[in-house]
Image (cartoon, rainbow, N blue to C red; front, side, top):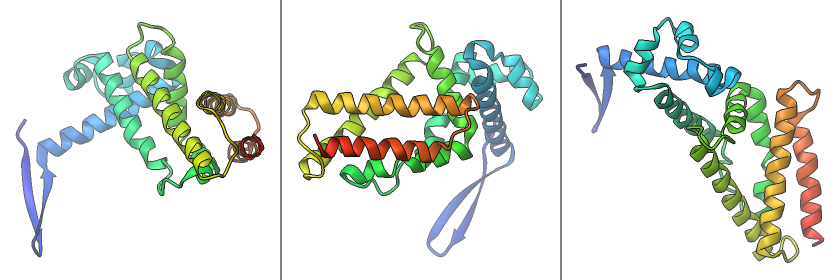
Length: 215
């Protein structure tokens, strides 16, 4: 597939603009990934067929294979896109210590506005408990990164004197419990519980900080 580009010059800056068939191919690929994200979020990877995904974009399963090589390849593309999309709600200023945890309710605001993104992660995470699931390594790595990064923030709070002295074992336990609480309330919200997700997370974060400061 030929790639056609047109350079637009503004002063000393040259910006390449993708045009023609190549651009259409990229847009088609993105359209398929969005549809696959919806189907996998609703039906899971196992239940979400290539035909169901193709029907949403007016493409045959063979066309999807042509773009991604296999159903597993399409799932990997979906997870890569999920990583890019969710990086946008990462706490932008990376505040130190306890301020990082106090900013977490903003993540829940993002979930409320992007239900499908949360639904995809929860569904695939549940399926990935199967050792043979293609997303298992991705989900394991995701949780390991979260526990490590959040533990560093709590360790930073200890070093700054914002909370009481906590051992590494206590810090990891606190963070794993925090992750479990957030996952739990998110799941309840997805299941239709009449809860204010950001407010409920704010309540728990406040309670956790009180516990840490009196350690």
